[in-house]
Image (cartoon, rainbow, N blue to C red; front, side, top):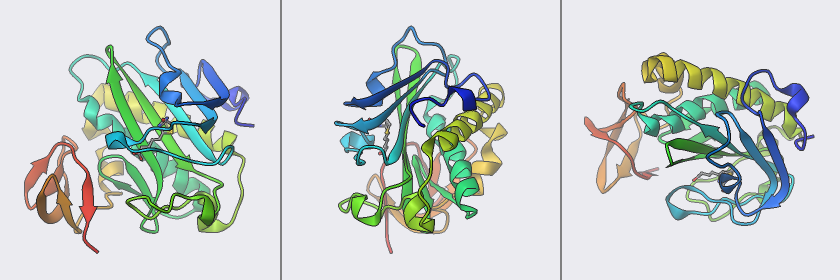
Length: 239
Ligand code: BTN
């Protein structure tokens, strides 16, 4: 039951665990008094937010829609948190499906060239709220058809309907470990896991008006396009 995953939690992430059946967006359920690792989860979001002003939608009870409060120390490169979270999500997906997953810079997780999860990191008042939308039990018809990338859920990949609670507990445990490693050692501490799952490497892309071939990520987590480091943006794919 995603309403109560506390018995499954292994670390400090998920405490407190704030579950609601319906809300506009879980991003708004965490407040500055909450401790690091506080988590908000909804079965249904009526105004789920994606990056760059987009919407995130999923029918009630089908997806993992969770927000996690982080308090990185001053001076850390918080824009890297999407990649750190992407690593935790990709590993969770891989364990569930026994298939490899990729991270599409800067915030998507892909399986079989389809987007299975999106990450939205929002900084405010010295903290970062990281929102995770992971498609779990949607059927093909329930996935957004107008998405800029074709979408997948765990169910459309292997046909299995799953309890979301153990998946979320696993994801929070992985996120806590990768976040702690990043907080102590920077992106280098998690780089191998991210770099080896780079979806864009070698593909023709267009980002911020620049067309070229993605050459991987640099050690600061920037996307290299024909050797130029891109800090943020929306990546369009050719083919
Ligand atoms: C994206 O793909 O652009 C990011 C999607 C992020 C969706 C999650 S669902 C939980 C949290 N609450 C929101 O309103 N958005 C994030």
